[in-house]
Image 1 (cartoon, rainbow, N blue to C red):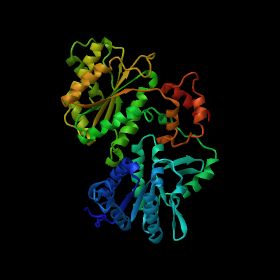
Image 2: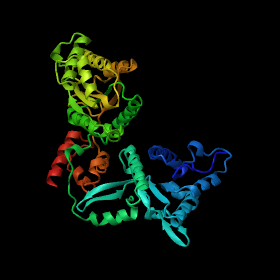
Image 3: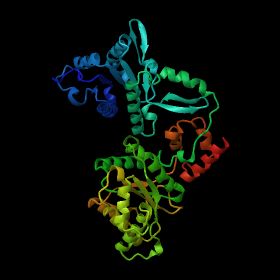
Image 4: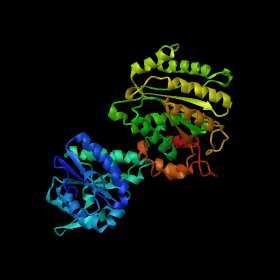
Length: 471
Protein backbone atom coordinates (compact mmCIF):
# COMPACT_ATOMS: atom_id res chain seq x y z
CA UNK A 1 0.00 0.00 0.00
CA UNK A 2 1.27 3.47 -0.81
CA UNK A 3 2.55 5.59 2.03
CA UNK A 4 -0.14 7.56 3.82
CA UNK A 5 1.98 10.47 4.92
CA UNK A 6 3.24 13.41 2.95
CA UNK A 7 6.98 13.60 2.27
CA UNK A 8 8.56 14.49 5.56
CA UNK A 9 11.46 16.32 3.91
CA UNK A 10 9.07 19.16 3.17
CA UNK A 11 8.88 22.12 5.50
CA UNK A 12 5.41 22.84 4.09
CA UNK A 13 3.09 19.88 3.69
CA UNK A 14 0.17 20.90 1.47
CA UNK A 15 -3.09 18.92 1.45
CA UNK A 16 -5.56 19.48 -1.41
CA UNK A 17 -9.17 18.92 -0.31
CA UNK A 18 -11.75 18.51 -3.06
CA UNK A 19 -14.88 16.66 -4.11
CA UNK A 20 -14.31 14.17 -6.93
CA UNK A 21 -16.88 16.02 -9.03
CA UNK A 22 -14.17 18.72 -9.19
CA UNK A 23 -11.42 16.30 -10.27
CA UNK A 24 -10.28 18.36 -13.28
CA UNK A 25 -9.93 21.50 -11.15
CA UNK A 26 -7.92 19.51 -8.58
CA UNK A 27 -5.53 18.34 -11.30
CA UNK A 28 -5.10 21.93 -12.54
CA UNK A 29 -4.42 23.13 -9.00
CA UNK A 30 -1.92 20.32 -8.53
CA UNK A 31 0.04 21.54 -11.56
CA UNK A 32 0.20 25.02 -10.06
CA UNK A 33 1.26 23.75 -6.63
CA UNK A 34 3.86 21.33 -7.98
CA UNK A 35 5.50 24.16 -9.93
CA UNK A 36 5.48 26.31 -6.80
CA UNK A 37 7.00 23.49 -4.73
CA UNK A 38 9.84 23.08 -7.21
CA UNK A 39 10.64 26.77 -6.86
CA UNK A 40 10.42 26.80 -3.06
CA UNK A 41 12.32 23.55 -2.65
CA UNK A 42 10.92 22.78 0.79
CA UNK A 43 7.28 21.95 0.06
CA UNK A 44 5.31 18.87 -1.01
CA UNK A 45 1.71 18.29 -2.09
CA UNK A 46 -0.75 15.54 -1.15
CA UNK A 47 -3.43 14.90 -3.77
CA UNK A 48 -5.14 11.52 -3.57
CA UNK A 49 -5.26 11.03 -7.34
CA UNK A 50 -1.65 11.86 -8.21
CA UNK A 51 1.83 10.43 -7.74
CA UNK A 52 2.84 8.38 -4.69
CA UNK A 53 -0.29 9.53 -2.87
CA UNK A 54 -2.68 8.09 -5.45
CA UNK A 55 -5.38 5.93 -3.87
CA UNK A 56 -5.48 2.42 -5.29
CA UNK A 57 -8.06 -0.33 -5.18
CA UNK A 58 -7.89 -2.04 -1.80
CA UNK A 59 -6.39 0.98 -0.01
CA UNK A 60 -7.87 2.03 3.30
CA UNK A 61 -8.65 5.37 1.74
CA UNK A 62 -10.24 7.06 4.75
CA UNK A 63 -7.29 6.22 6.98
CA UNK A 64 -4.82 7.34 4.34
CA UNK A 65 -6.58 10.65 3.79
CA UNK A 66 -6.93 11.39 7.51
CA UNK A 67 -3.26 10.56 8.09
CA UNK A 68 -2.43 13.20 5.46
CA UNK A 69 -4.86 15.70 7.02
CA UNK A 70 -3.24 15.19 10.43
CA UNK A 71 0.30 15.67 9.12
CA UNK A 72 -0.27 18.60 6.75
CA UNK A 73 0.28 22.20 7.79
CA UNK A 74 -1.25 23.90 4.73
CA UNK A 75 -4.75 23.07 3.47
CA UNK A 76 -6.07 24.20 0.09
CA UNK A 77 -9.83 23.63 -0.32
CA UNK A 78 -11.60 23.67 -3.68
CA UNK A 79 -14.87 25.29 -2.66
CA UNK A 80 -17.94 24.31 -4.67
CA UNK A 81 -21.51 23.23 -4.15
CA UNK A 82 -20.34 19.65 -4.76
CA UNK A 83 -17.82 19.94 -1.93
CA UNK A 84 -20.45 21.31 0.42
CA UNK A 85 -22.87 18.51 -0.56
CA UNK A 86 -20.34 15.79 0.28
CA UNK A 87 -20.71 14.59 3.92
CA UNK A 88 -17.11 13.35 4.02
CA UNK A 89 -15.66 16.57 2.58
CA UNK A 90 -17.82 18.82 4.77
CA UNK A 91 -18.15 16.92 8.05
CA UNK A 92 -14.84 15.06 8.18
CA UNK A 93 -12.10 16.78 6.14
CA UNK A 94 -13.25 20.38 6.58
CA UNK A 95 -14.02 19.92 10.27
CA UNK A 96 -10.60 18.44 11.00
CA UNK A 97 -8.82 21.14 9.03
CA UNK A 98 -10.60 23.93 10.88
CA UNK A 99 -10.03 22.15 14.20
CA UNK A 100 -6.32 22.09 13.51
CA UNK A 101 -6.39 25.72 12.41
CA UNK A 102 -8.03 26.68 15.70
CA UNK A 103 -5.59 24.67 17.84
CA UNK A 104 -2.44 25.31 15.80
CA UNK A 105 -2.16 28.94 14.64
CA UNK A 106 0.69 28.13 12.24
CA UNK A 107 -1.64 25.92 10.19
CA UNK A 108 -3.01 27.66 7.09
CA UNK A 109 -6.38 27.01 5.46
CA UNK A 110 -6.86 28.55 2.01
CA UNK A 111 -10.12 28.34 0.06
CA UNK A 112 -10.30 28.41 -3.74
CA UNK A 113 -13.76 29.42 -5.03
CA UNK A 114 -14.47 27.45 -8.21
CA UNK A 115 -17.75 29.30 -8.67
CA UNK A 116 -19.97 31.58 -6.64
CA UNK A 117 -20.65 29.97 -3.27
CA UNK A 118 -22.09 31.10 0.03
CA UNK A 119 -19.00 31.15 2.22
CA UNK A 120 -21.16 30.81 5.33
CA UNK A 121 -22.03 27.28 4.16
CA UNK A 122 -18.41 26.30 4.74
CA UNK A 123 -18.81 26.32 8.50
CA UNK A 124 -18.40 23.60 11.15
CA UNK A 125 -18.70 23.46 14.93
CA UNK A 126 -15.41 23.29 16.81
CA UNK A 127 -15.49 23.10 20.62
CA UNK A 128 -19.07 24.35 20.64
CA UNK A 129 -18.30 27.36 18.43
CA UNK A 130 -19.05 27.85 14.75
CA UNK A 131 -15.89 28.26 12.67
CA UNK A 132 -16.44 29.38 9.08
CA UNK A 133 -14.09 29.33 6.14
CA UNK A 134 -15.07 32.91 5.36
CA UNK A 135 -12.83 34.03 8.20
CA UNK A 136 -9.77 32.60 6.47
CA UNK A 137 -8.03 33.24 3.16
CA UNK A 138 -10.16 32.80 0.06
CA UNK A 139 -8.82 33.02 -3.50
CA UNK A 140 -8.48 34.08 -6.27
CA UNK A 141 -8.66 37.80 -5.57
CA UNK A 142 -8.39 40.74 -7.91
CA UNK A 143 -7.68 44.37 -7.19
CA UNK A 144 -10.42 46.76 -8.29
CA UNK A 145 -9.82 50.49 -8.65
CA UNK A 146 -12.32 52.60 -6.71
CA UNK A 147 -12.50 56.25 -5.67
CA UNK A 148 -10.77 55.22 -2.45
CA UNK A 149 -7.96 53.41 -4.28
CA UNK A 150 -7.35 49.79 -5.17
CA UNK A 151 -9.29 47.22 -3.15
CA UNK A 152 -9.17 43.41 -3.25
CA UNK A 153 -12.18 41.31 -4.13
CA UNK A 154 -12.88 37.58 -4.36
CA UNK A 155 -13.45 36.51 -7.97
CA UNK A 156 -14.32 32.79 -8.43
CA UNK A 157 -12.47 30.78 -11.08
CA UNK A 158 -15.47 30.56 -13.44
CA UNK A 159 -15.88 34.37 -13.45
CA UNK A 160 -12.53 34.77 -15.20
CA UNK A 161 -12.71 34.92 -18.98
CA UNK A 162 -9.68 32.63 -19.21
CA UNK A 163 -9.24 29.96 -16.56
CA UNK A 164 -5.47 29.92 -17.18
CA UNK A 165 -5.25 33.51 -15.89
CA UNK A 166 -7.20 32.55 -12.76
CA UNK A 167 -4.96 29.58 -11.94
CA UNK A 168 -1.80 31.62 -12.44
CA UNK A 169 -3.21 34.19 -9.99
CA UNK A 170 -4.13 31.42 -7.51
CA UNK A 171 -0.57 30.09 -7.60
CA UNK A 172 0.94 33.52 -7.09
CA UNK A 173 -1.36 34.34 -4.17
CA UNK A 174 -0.83 30.99 -2.44
CA UNK A 175 2.92 31.43 -2.72
CA UNK A 176 2.65 34.97 -1.37
CA UNK A 177 0.62 33.68 1.58
CA UNK A 178 3.16 30.99 2.40
CA UNK A 179 6.20 33.22 2.10
CA UNK A 180 4.94 36.40 3.74
CA UNK A 181 3.06 35.73 6.96
CA UNK A 182 3.00 39.43 7.69
CA UNK A 183 1.30 40.14 4.35
CA UNK A 184 -1.63 37.70 4.24
CA UNK A 185 -4.09 37.54 1.40
CA UNK A 186 -7.29 39.28 2.47
CA UNK A 187 -10.01 37.02 3.83
CA UNK A 188 -13.45 37.14 2.26
CA UNK A 189 -14.91 38.94 5.30
CA UNK A 190 -12.10 41.52 5.26
CA UNK A 191 -12.61 41.91 1.53
CA UNK A 192 -16.29 42.77 1.97
CA UNK A 193 -15.51 45.18 4.79
CA UNK A 194 -13.09 46.95 2.48
CA UNK A 195 -15.16 47.10 -0.68
CA UNK A 196 -18.70 47.64 0.62
CA UNK A 197 -18.08 51.31 1.63
CA UNK A 198 -16.67 51.95 -1.82
CA UNK A 199 -19.63 50.56 -3.75
CA UNK A 200 -21.62 53.75 -3.33
CA UNK A 201 -18.65 56.03 -4.04
CA UNK A 202 -18.26 57.76 -7.43
CA UNK A 203 -16.47 55.39 -9.76
CA UNK A 204 -13.77 56.96 -11.95
CA UNK A 205 -13.45 55.64 -15.48
CA UNK A 206 -9.81 55.06 -16.30
CA UNK A 207 -10.12 52.73 -19.26
CA UNK A 208 -7.78 53.15 -22.18
CA UNK A 209 -8.55 52.21 -25.78
CA UNK A 210 -5.96 49.41 -25.46
CA UNK A 211 -8.24 47.74 -22.92
CA UNK A 212 -10.98 47.11 -25.47
CA UNK A 213 -11.76 43.42 -26.09
CA UNK A 214 -9.78 42.98 -29.31
CA UNK A 215 -8.79 39.49 -28.25
CA UNK A 216 -9.85 38.77 -24.69
CA UNK A 217 -13.37 37.60 -25.53
CA UNK A 218 -12.56 35.59 -28.65
CA UNK A 219 -12.72 32.11 -27.12
CA UNK A 220 -12.03 29.95 -30.19
CA UNK A 221 -9.10 32.09 -31.29
CA UNK A 222 -7.72 32.24 -27.76
CA UNK A 223 -7.91 28.45 -27.30
CA UNK A 224 -6.19 27.78 -30.62
CA UNK A 225 -3.52 30.38 -29.84
CA UNK A 226 -2.76 28.99 -26.38
CA UNK A 227 -2.52 25.39 -27.65
CA UNK A 228 -0.08 26.52 -30.35
CA UNK A 229 2.03 28.53 -27.91
CA UNK A 230 2.31 25.59 -25.51
CA UNK A 231 3.44 23.30 -28.34
CA UNK A 232 5.92 25.95 -29.52
CA UNK A 233 7.37 26.34 -26.04
CA UNK A 234 8.05 22.59 -25.86
CA UNK A 235 10.37 22.97 -28.89
CA UNK A 236 12.20 25.85 -27.15
CA UNK A 237 10.97 28.23 -29.90
CA UNK A 238 13.54 26.85 -32.34
CA UNK A 239 11.47 27.68 -35.45
CA UNK A 240 9.54 30.88 -36.33
CA UNK A 241 5.84 30.84 -35.40
CA UNK A 242 3.27 31.87 -38.04
CA UNK A 243 -0.25 32.85 -36.93
CA UNK A 244 -3.00 33.47 -39.51
CA UNK A 245 -6.23 35.29 -38.59
CA UNK A 246 -9.16 36.20 -40.84
CA UNK A 247 -11.42 39.22 -40.57
CA UNK A 248 -12.70 42.46 -42.06
CA UNK A 249 -11.33 45.94 -41.60
CA UNK A 250 -14.10 46.60 -39.06
CA UNK A 251 -12.84 43.67 -36.99
CA UNK A 252 -9.69 45.69 -36.12
CA UNK A 253 -7.17 42.98 -36.98
CA UNK A 254 -4.27 45.36 -36.40
CA UNK A 255 -5.40 45.89 -32.81
CA UNK A 256 -6.02 42.16 -32.48
CA UNK A 257 -2.37 41.49 -33.33
CA UNK A 258 -1.18 44.29 -31.06
CA UNK A 259 -3.11 42.93 -28.11
CA UNK A 260 -2.05 39.36 -28.90
CA UNK A 261 1.58 40.47 -28.68
CA UNK A 262 1.23 42.78 -25.70
CA UNK A 263 -1.02 40.57 -23.59
CA UNK A 264 -1.86 36.97 -24.51
CA UNK A 265 1.51 35.78 -25.87
CA UNK A 266 3.47 37.58 -23.16
CA UNK A 267 1.29 36.14 -20.39
CA UNK A 268 0.96 32.62 -21.78
CA UNK A 269 4.69 32.17 -22.33
CA UNK A 270 5.62 33.77 -18.99
CA UNK A 271 7.74 36.61 -20.38
CA UNK A 272 7.88 38.33 -16.99
CA UNK A 273 9.26 35.22 -15.27
CA UNK A 274 11.84 34.80 -18.05
CA UNK A 275 12.78 38.49 -18.00
CA UNK A 276 11.70 38.93 -21.64
CA UNK A 277 9.81 41.46 -23.74
CA UNK A 278 9.23 41.96 -27.45
CA UNK A 279 12.23 44.00 -28.61
CA UNK A 280 10.61 44.58 -31.99
CA UNK A 281 6.90 44.80 -32.74
CA UNK A 282 6.60 45.93 -36.35
CA UNK A 283 4.47 45.63 -39.51
CA UNK A 284 5.81 44.79 -42.95
CA UNK A 285 4.22 44.80 -46.42
CA UNK A 286 2.66 42.06 -48.53
CA UNK A 287 3.67 42.24 -52.22
CA UNK A 288 1.17 44.38 -54.12
CA UNK A 289 -0.94 42.81 -56.84
CA UNK A 290 0.89 45.05 -59.33
CA UNK A 291 4.24 43.50 -58.37
CA UNK A 292 3.83 40.96 -61.17
CA UNK A 293 5.46 38.09 -59.32
CA UNK A 294 6.38 35.28 -61.69
CA UNK A 295 8.11 32.92 -59.26
CA UNK A 296 8.43 31.99 -55.61
CA UNK A 297 12.04 33.19 -55.73
CA UNK A 298 10.90 36.69 -56.70
CA UNK A 299 8.49 36.72 -53.75
CA UNK A 300 11.22 35.38 -51.50
CA UNK A 301 13.58 38.21 -52.46
CA UNK A 302 10.88 40.80 -51.78
CA UNK A 303 10.36 39.39 -48.28
CA UNK A 304 14.13 39.28 -47.67
CA UNK A 305 14.18 43.04 -48.25
CA UNK A 306 11.11 43.48 -46.02
CA UNK A 307 12.67 41.51 -43.17
CA UNK A 308 16.01 43.27 -43.60
CA UNK A 309 14.18 46.56 -43.22
CA UNK A 310 12.57 45.57 -39.90
CA UNK A 311 15.27 43.31 -38.42
CA UNK A 312 18.47 45.01 -39.53
CA UNK A 313 19.77 48.61 -39.40
CA UNK A 314 20.78 48.23 -43.07
CA UNK A 315 17.68 47.85 -45.28
CA UNK A 316 19.79 46.44 -48.16
CA UNK A 317 21.26 43.72 -45.98
CA UNK A 318 21.33 40.15 -47.18
CA UNK A 319 19.15 37.41 -45.74
CA UNK A 320 22.07 36.12 -43.66
CA UNK A 321 22.89 39.60 -42.35
CA UNK A 322 19.25 40.25 -41.39
CA UNK A 323 18.97 37.05 -39.35
CA UNK A 324 22.43 37.58 -37.86
CA UNK A 325 21.32 41.02 -36.66
CA UNK A 326 18.23 39.42 -35.09
CA UNK A 327 20.31 36.77 -33.31
CA UNK A 328 22.83 39.34 -32.09
CA UNK A 329 20.13 41.65 -30.76
CA UNK A 330 18.71 38.70 -28.77
CA UNK A 331 15.19 40.08 -28.26
CA UNK A 332 11.91 38.29 -29.05
CA UNK A 333 10.37 39.83 -32.15
CA UNK A 334 6.80 39.99 -33.47
CA UNK A 335 6.03 41.08 -37.02
CA UNK A 336 2.71 41.27 -38.84
CA UNK A 337 1.45 41.74 -42.38
CA UNK A 338 -1.96 42.27 -44.00
CA UNK A 339 -2.98 40.29 -47.09
CA UNK A 340 -6.16 41.22 -48.96
CA UNK A 341 -8.52 38.31 -49.48
CA UNK A 342 -9.45 39.84 -52.83
CA UNK A 343 -6.03 39.37 -54.44
CA UNK A 344 -5.57 36.65 -57.05
CA UNK A 345 -5.07 33.18 -55.61
CA UNK A 346 -1.92 32.59 -57.69
CA UNK A 347 -0.37 35.83 -56.42
CA UNK A 348 -1.27 35.05 -52.80
CA UNK A 349 0.03 31.48 -53.10
CA UNK A 350 3.33 32.63 -54.59
CA UNK A 351 3.74 35.38 -51.99
CA UNK A 352 3.05 33.07 -49.06
CA UNK A 353 5.46 30.43 -50.35
CA UNK A 354 8.12 33.14 -50.68
CA UNK A 355 7.57 34.33 -47.10
CA UNK A 356 7.65 30.80 -45.69
CA UNK A 357 10.81 30.03 -47.68
CA UNK A 358 12.58 32.93 -45.97
CA UNK A 359 11.33 31.93 -42.52
CA UNK A 360 12.22 28.26 -43.10
CA UNK A 361 15.80 29.29 -43.93
CA UNK A 362 16.09 31.11 -40.62
CA UNK A 363 18.82 29.64 -38.35
CA UNK A 364 17.77 27.91 -35.15
CA UNK A 365 16.16 30.30 -32.69
CA UNK A 366 15.59 30.14 -28.94
CA UNK A 367 13.95 31.76 -25.93
CA UNK A 368 15.58 35.16 -26.44
CA UNK A 369 15.45 35.12 -30.23
CA UNK A 370 11.92 33.81 -30.78
CA UNK A 371 10.21 35.15 -33.90
CA UNK A 372 6.43 35.47 -34.37
CA UNK A 373 4.92 36.44 -37.74
CA UNK A 374 1.19 37.25 -37.77
CA UNK A 375 -0.67 37.27 -41.11
CA UNK A 376 -4.05 39.00 -41.33
CA UNK A 377 -6.31 37.82 -44.13
CA UNK A 378 -8.49 40.90 -44.74
CA UNK A 379 -11.90 39.98 -46.16
CA UNK A 380 -14.25 42.34 -47.97
CA UNK A 381 -16.14 44.80 -45.78
CA UNK A 382 -19.52 43.39 -46.84
CA UNK A 383 -18.55 39.78 -46.09
CA UNK A 384 -20.48 38.02 -43.30
CA UNK A 385 -18.69 38.07 -39.95
CA UNK A 386 -18.55 34.28 -39.68
CA UNK A 387 -17.54 33.56 -43.30
CA UNK A 388 -14.21 31.93 -44.18
CA UNK A 389 -11.72 33.96 -46.15
CA UNK A 390 -11.57 33.01 -49.83
CA UNK A 391 -7.84 32.30 -49.50
CA UNK A 392 -8.05 30.41 -46.21
CA UNK A 393 -7.93 26.92 -47.73
CA UNK A 394 -5.06 27.94 -50.01
CA UNK A 395 -3.11 29.34 -47.06
CA UNK A 396 -3.83 26.27 -44.94
CA UNK A 397 -2.37 23.96 -47.60
CA UNK A 398 0.83 25.98 -48.08
CA UNK A 399 1.38 26.42 -44.34
CA UNK A 400 0.75 22.73 -43.60
CA UNK A 401 3.50 21.84 -46.05
CA UNK A 402 5.96 24.23 -44.40
CA UNK A 403 5.12 22.81 -40.97
CA UNK A 404 5.50 19.23 -42.25
CA UNK A 405 9.02 19.97 -43.51
CA UNK A 406 9.99 21.51 -40.16
CA UNK A 407 10.49 25.02 -41.50
CA UNK A 408 8.01 26.77 -39.21
CA UNK A 409 5.37 26.19 -36.59
CA UNK A 410 1.96 27.66 -37.32
CA UNK A 411 -1.73 27.96 -36.52
CA UNK A 412 -4.78 29.06 -38.47
CA UNK A 413 -6.76 31.00 -35.86
CA UNK A 414 -9.91 31.33 -37.93
CA UNK A 415 -12.25 34.26 -38.48
CA UNK A 416 -12.90 36.86 -35.79
CA UNK A 417 -16.53 36.81 -34.66
CA UNK A 418 -18.52 39.93 -33.93
CA UNK A 419 -19.17 40.85 -30.32
CA UNK A 420 -22.42 39.80 -28.68
CA UNK A 421 -23.79 41.04 -25.36
CA UNK A 422 -22.27 38.21 -23.25
CA UNK A 423 -18.84 39.04 -24.75
CA UNK A 424 -19.20 42.64 -23.62
CA UNK A 425 -20.37 41.56 -20.18
CA UNK A 426 -17.40 39.20 -19.79
CA UNK A 427 -15.09 41.95 -20.98
CA UNK A 428 -16.23 44.22 -18.14
CA UNK A 429 -14.58 41.80 -15.70
CA UNK A 430 -11.48 41.04 -17.75
CA UNK A 431 -7.82 41.92 -17.14
CA UNK A 432 -7.19 45.70 -17.28
CA UNK A 433 -10.89 46.55 -17.07
CA UNK A 434 -11.17 44.82 -13.67
CA UNK A 435 -14.88 45.46 -13.21
CA UNK A 436 -14.61 49.25 -13.54
CA UNK A 437 -17.62 49.33 -15.85
CA UNK A 438 -19.70 46.59 -14.26
CA UNK A 439 -22.46 49.01 -13.26
CA UNK A 440 -22.44 50.75 -16.66
CA UNK A 441 -22.39 47.81 -19.05
CA UNK A 442 -26.16 47.74 -19.54
CA UNK A 443 -26.22 51.42 -20.50
CA UNK A 444 -23.12 51.03 -22.67
CA UNK A 445 -24.74 48.12 -24.53
CA UNK A 446 -27.92 50.16 -25.07
CA UNK A 447 -25.78 52.84 -26.72
CA UNK A 448 -24.81 50.41 -29.49
CA UNK A 449 -26.70 50.53 -32.83
CA UNK A 450 -30.10 48.86 -32.52
CA UNK A 451 -31.68 46.28 -34.77
CA UNK A 452 -28.85 43.75 -34.53
CA UNK A 453 -27.61 41.16 -32.03
CA UNK A 454 -23.87 41.49 -32.70
CA UNK A 455 -21.48 44.30 -33.53
CA UNK A 456 -18.09 44.60 -35.27
CA UNK A 457 -15.17 45.47 -33.02
CA UNK A 458 -14.78 48.89 -34.61
CA UNK A 459 -18.41 49.79 -33.91
CA UNK A 460 -18.08 48.79 -30.27
CA UNK A 461 -14.74 50.61 -29.94
CA UNK A 462 -16.18 53.88 -31.24
CA UNK A 463 -19.21 53.71 -28.93
CA UNK A 464 -17.02 52.74 -25.96
CA UNK A 465 -14.58 55.59 -26.57
CA UNK A 466 -17.43 58.08 -26.66
CA UNK A 467 -18.80 56.56 -23.47
CA UNK A 468 -15.42 56.89 -21.75
CA UNK A 469 -15.12 60.48 -22.89
CA UNK A 470 -18.57 61.60 -21.70
CA UNK A 471 -18.79 59.52 -18.51
